Image (cartoon, rainbow, N blue to C red; front, side, top):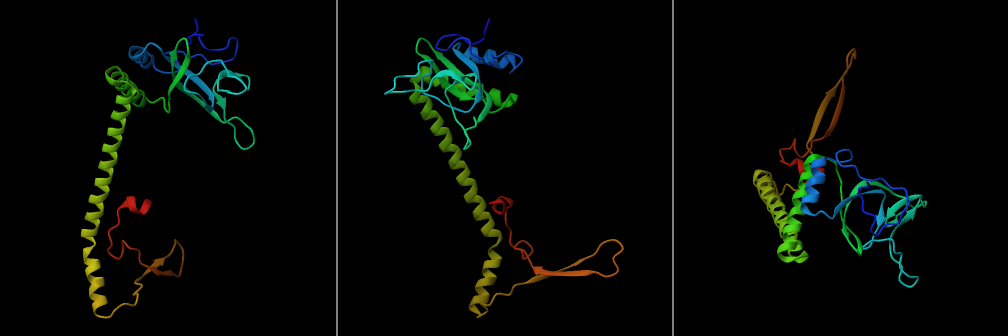
Length: 229
């Protein structure tokens, strides 16, 4: 018996049927069915564009729509995107769809990893979504996600501000020295430099490199995250 119901799909096309316990952990499959028995995993060979509700109906000439149909010799859920040479862009990941019989299928999300921690996080997120929808619908779930996102952004902004204040405090002596030099009329750049002696095994003479010192060698404290930016 096939894993995917036939509802809303064309028949006889080549597609990869999901095998619980082989393609993904069986426990993950059971968790999905416990949340909603109408959740199914669908293999996407290509990157596609899709409508809110998908089935095999392609629409009229005046109002065409994306559909579950044959493209490039496979059953494809949506319109295949291509590169600048017309070649299909591959996806090759599992996507979660919900059967909305008799209307068709609704896309839920794509799986970005097979890692067990990620799958557990996805199950918790779907459980939160199901709970929020039961309590207040899609708007309630969207509000919960926005609140969580805003809290995370506020925390990141606060951490960055605290780091900026701490760095300024540690480097205060350099600013004070610069202000003293300015007050004394010493405004020309000093360009402090450093000599580096280099040699290698068997070398009879040594080479000398002279370069400007870095901010850190001059005493300035710069966090690693700032250097990366």
